[in-house]
Length: 301
Ligand code: COA
Ligand code: ZN
Image (tube, rainbow, N blue to C red; front, top):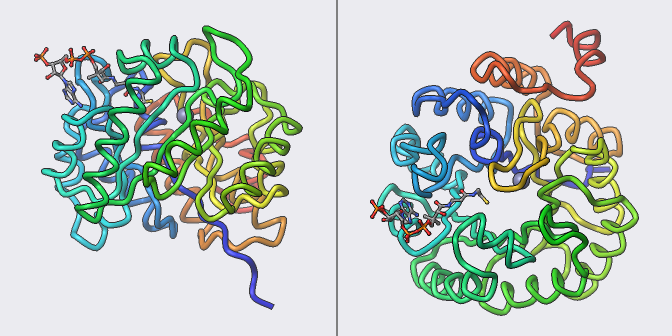
């Protein structure tokens, strides 16, 4: 019997690197993305077109994209916060973009200088343009469960924003626990409702590991029907605008869990561990996967 496929969307080169003390050069970021491709990953967030004053680590995203052939570029997405970012991303050859909406106004203002309603307005314009240009749009609901400034988020808010993005024409929506505060019970309840309303094909989960619950949260979402997950090589991550957020769930740990549950991620573990070592060497600060000790024994990695 063929195993059910699950998509792992690698966000280390963007969500992971944007918060590291050491800024990697475009060449170093290209080498990391190449190592991730070599591991079989086919959805990779390569960077963001944001103000280099706001996030210096992401400067030169155009040079990163320039390192790839057209068929590789089609597998890379980039984050864009506004129209200017979208235009720059398109000029650099991007055909997949991620837009971020925050569930609270305070987070939205701190992150991209606009309140949630204004960001939604801007997002609608970008989505319409992207649709005309054949660009794939993934919308994010940041702080979907809890905000570092405003506290617990009413699930109805996240549901409404998800609906708004899909109605506007976004191809999919990622539900993001930006600060790693969600519980598996909350994730399962919200994801079940969203899957019932929209179907799993347009949804994905994005979990941070601040309270060591990210793998459990991925499992809760999987159980609710979700078949696409963001993760970050070597557990890199943290948001510069969300105090207290630690890294994303490590790609190695998510792949291990999904494969153990009988899912097919298409990822080659030894090659993924090589990419993980590269990420740890390049940054000097990547925490590594939670199962690092076990991986070392099992793969002599
Ligand atoms: N890429 C590069 N530069 C951009 C830009 C973009 N997408 N959008 C705006 N800018 C530039 C403007 O041209 C202007 O440049 P100048 O100072 O040389 O004239 C400067 O940034 C300020 O523009 P303004 O429109 O006043 O925006 P702002 O200062 O309110 O900043 C953002 C808004 C969105 C550019 C900024 O907050 C940002 O880049 N945030 C990124 C947040 C992020 O990456 N978060 C993590 C992912 S969720
Ligand atoms: Zn994140």
